Length: 325
Image 1 (cartoon, one colour):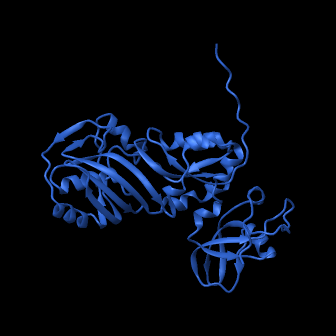
Image 2 (tube, one colour):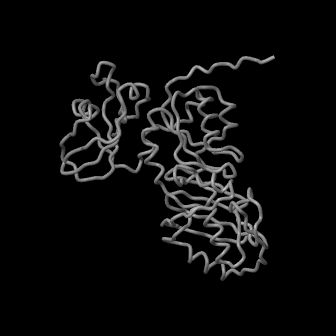
């Protein structure tokens, strides 16, 4: 006998949830679980983590999804463990071992390789990746035993620390630019040490301004009531915390939300977070104390030029921030 599933009543939810993604779930599976727990209408994430990786996964809900693309470009920090002396078909513990080599390394070897892979480097994307060739993901070709030609890409390793983790393993801590493959970095480090390597553990400990200390697990989220779950959300503007902040008056705020440029005594700036009084349902400005995040912009020649904007309904559904002194 089939038990009918309970239909979840969705609702508008706006903000950012810093999830500590568990091992074994894809980023989308973790997103859908959190979306269900929050009963959110709309959700997305800011860059995937492999099922065999854990750690910081910012999830965007409602209005925050408009700004998730900005966070894809953020630097990220990972901690990984690489097993030396064995290469696998996937670069991690999920693949088949395809080569064994003896392991021997010294502290000076680690220092040399650490310097070699710090700064701008060039990587060949792995076949087991979501990059596409002729509209088909590379991992789909790899599962068919087909290797396709890939172009190398330039990435930056901002910082790198290699330390021994036993006789045949090393711990890797790396802060990297967008598009860096940690599995590939581990494999390349193994090659530079002369013995090959594959990752046996991977955790993302920070992405942009968000670190693991601020994350919540799915288990914790499940144990909370609805109000406690909503209280875990960071405001949408947390995604643009590094932007220049501009506060508009009521008249300018209303026109800015209509997509009109505003003039002011501002220096040029490429990334601006714009705030102002919240509009009411009829388009007027609210008299409720507080500042509403209106959207992003850039400033050129004294003009504030709108970028991605919230709509009035999204703003009304979002708690106001305390006025700036």
